[in-house]
Length: 317
Image (cartoon, rainbow, N blue to C red; front, side, top):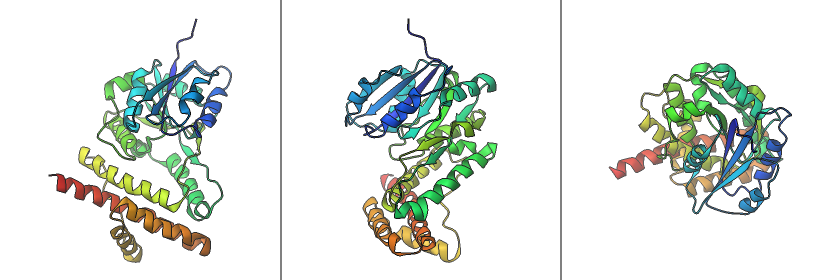
């Protein structure tokens, strides 16, 4: 007789055939005595071999949901959470490698702490490159340190790739908001809704997972910033009371540089063009100069994305 899972791990996956094996290996290697858990992988509309890979997985209590077309991360998360059978609902993105006590720590947190939201930090793993040396590795260290030091009232901003809630919380707070159609902020939105409902959010360093899917180039990182800038504007429209302002450009020469860079990034194609130029410059300049150039592209893209989203909303009125 199959054992009912105490925890359900929901994995949204788009073109994940190259990423999923590492995640599945780490889930199959959970420590002895781990509470029973299931894994639900939602294949989001493009089967790049993921379905066959998952169908051949015999180590885990695993179910597959396949979308016939790409519907986006929000729909994938909602479908997976709705199908879950466990009392502890864990989101885990397909490009993570989790520690051997991952499930046990999530379950224990909900068992011992009452109603709580649990965040597992992630640590970006970069392959050697000019971008990694100039920006990616340093940004990864700072991001992890920042996550571990956030005060309680700001932890909702960390709701992202690895996190968990109870079934009771899911039923009371509801689905991820499908008004987020691009990259980013559907997770921050959910964290804010937990915060607004008075549910404390705790960050557990023991849950730190390796993130094997960070941006690898200036262009990839800048495009994410551009799209996240637009999603940030959606968040501000939906939650005007939240303590989130426009992306800061800073003052002085740096602020002017960010604003000028943003002005040259009126579209995704323009972002890729500017960032691609900087990426080609990285092997030719000292590392501190390269770090500043990448930061200029990323910050400028974020400002441009927010402005682009506001302009689109105005034209739609």
